[in-house]
Image 1: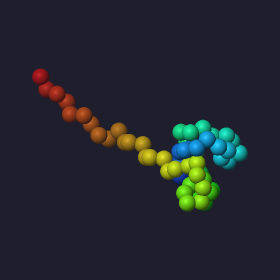
Image 2: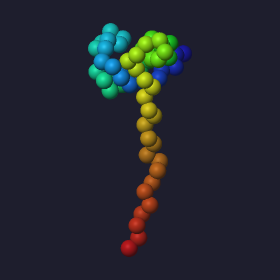
Image 3: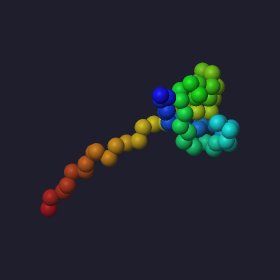
Image 4: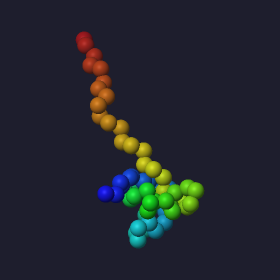
Length: 62
């Protein structure tokens, strides 16, 4: 089983046979992303995990 991770494009370029724009999300294995991330290359960074909606705002009582 391969562990896919989410990456974000930091430099517009061809990745996985498609031209990707800055900010595009890309899902790939660490091994495949190795050559697009530092120190081997450039163009991708690990995407920040999305915030969970578990935090509730306190209700105001009148």
